Each structure stands twice: as C-alpha cells, then as structure tokens.
Image (cartoon, rainbow, N blue to C red; front, top):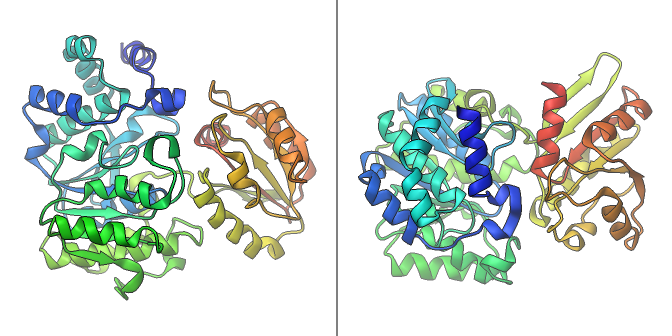
Length: 421
C-alpha cells in the first residue's frame, strides 16, 4: 500500500528532485490553505528555520543533535532524500533517530487526496504539510525546518520560528531566485521574521547589506557568525561530519547554539558537545565527505553531495589539500542535465583521472554530453554509462594508495551508497 501510494504521489505531483524547475511552485497561498485545513499543526511546536545555498543539511542535523542532547524531542525536516523518501521527516531523541512511519505516510496521502485533486499542491507543499502534522502527532518540543528553495516564497515560510539561520549565498537556481548574489540574498532573507533573532553564516559585500536592511525592517537582532568568536568547545577534527567546509558550518552552528542558550532553549554542556561531534551517526546524515571504503588492500572511496559552484569551490580546496596523501585520485563526476557545468568547470581539480558517469534518472546529463562539454575546457576522462560501471572501473585501476572521489549530484551519491549498503 505504501509503495503504491508513494509512487502515485511522485507521478501525480513530481518533485523538484525528480523533474527539476518544472516542479517549482513559488508562494505560500496553497500551503496556507493546506495548513488551515489541518488545523495549523505548526503552532503546536517551536521551530528553527534554516535557509542557504549550501550547508543547510549539515547545520540542520548538527543542530538537531544538539537540541536532542538537551532532552528535547526534535523534529527534523530536510530535502531532498538520498535513498528513502522518509529521510525527509525524522524524529531525533537523545542519541538516535527514526523516520516517519510508512503507515503515517499512507494515511496522510489517503486522507488529503481530495485536497490534492482540488488544489494541486506541489510535491514540496505536500511533504511540508506532512512533516508539520507528523511533528504535532509526535509532540515534538522543537522542529528544525529546512527551506526547499529560496525562502521568501518557500512553503516552509508560514512558520514563525524562535531563530532564523541563513548559512550562505551562492549562485544557484538563478531562474527562480535571481541572477545576482544580492537578488538571491533577498529571497533567502525572506525567512527573517519580526522580532525573531537571525544568524547569518557567511556574507559577501553584495549580500550583507541585504540582510542588514531586512533585519532592520523586521526589528530582528542579527548576528554575523563570521565576525564572532563563539566557541562551544568543539573542534573541526572531532566531527564525524568530515570535510574542511564543515568549519564554516560549525562556526554558524556555534553562533546559533549560543543564541539558543541565551534565550533558554538549550544548555551548552558536555552532552551537547558529544552529540554535535557525532551528529551524522545520531541523525543518520549521509553523503557529506563520507568514507565508504578504506584499507584491506582496496583504494579509499569518499563521496560528497556537493553539486553547485559554491560547493565545488570547497571540494576543490579539499582535494588540492589532500592530493599529496594519495598516489593517484580517480574523480567520478556525474551531474543533472540542467546544471550550469560552465560554472563548475574552472573549479574542477587538476592532476586527477576523471571518470564521467550518469545516474539512472531522467534528469541526469548523459556522460557523453558531459565529457564533450568539458572537452572545451581541456578536461578529459573516461566515459561510463552508470555509477556502478564508473566505480568498477575506478576500483580496477586503483591501488590501496589511491583515492576514488565521487560527486556531482544527489542521484549519483544515492546510487553509490546503494552499492555499499
């Protein structure tokens, strides 16, 4: 029953993850009507709202772990999912997580099908409403809510949180959010609410004035994490979420935790620090500079969900930093067809052996097309028809002293994880 209903939902209301920009539905009108029909479930719990181009997932999961360490029952709503639709809606308690039950998903789809047919909500509006109702049912104390795309017109923006967090701004989804950093910042700043404190993780000369102006108009106390020296007693090397880019997320998280401490939401203690350090295992987060294979005569395999220019900049820095640790690096890359490949081409690492691939998704760019495009940038490599073939090829060529690194799209990482699970 669950599988059939979920398939109906995906086919009837395609997700952005599945079909791209055609699934985008800006505005909160339908979401507000849906929420009213449900009896406004999000009023039954406190919430923290997180937006940003990159780092939302890592920051959300670390923050959920920190809140749970204080004895709170935490709802966690994120997107997209990698392996299981239910990854989007989780409950975090103490040192464990669980997904929304299949029975709840089935019942929700069945009960609200008349609304779906009449109002044609987007896939993201449906899952947002599902999360809010589930969190009310589970009597969560607080929910960490991640925006889907943007902020001002995002379905999640009907909430009034106790804290708003914007991690950073990069050029992504320009067709929806704007063609400049300032325009995108304006959309993300839409989650800043009246009298609700705001944490900004990173700024640029273009984005900072936008945040200052919006915060002033909403009388929101604004904290720029990059200008502060908040310390919760956790170092980057202690995190089970690896990758140098987590340094930025940890800085943003520290500012958020200090603010939440000052307003009495949580207490900074050793239990919290331990949970932040083990956030990936506690919350079940996958695909963030995750090591899937190492030792026993086999090459090291690391994957990362970085897929835009903003994220590739961090990946390039890390690859350059660790390149001396390996004899050779095999770089498996696969992207979606609407990806601005030109924006990432100059960020791809040098002195690696590229293997181009494609996920089993209608949105995937053909590996051959990717190779042809990058050929103009003097980037060449092997072409494979699947993630499985790409991994097999890399494994057959690599030694224990080599690294196989995989990135480019969530679809590629999802298929890679299935090969190791």
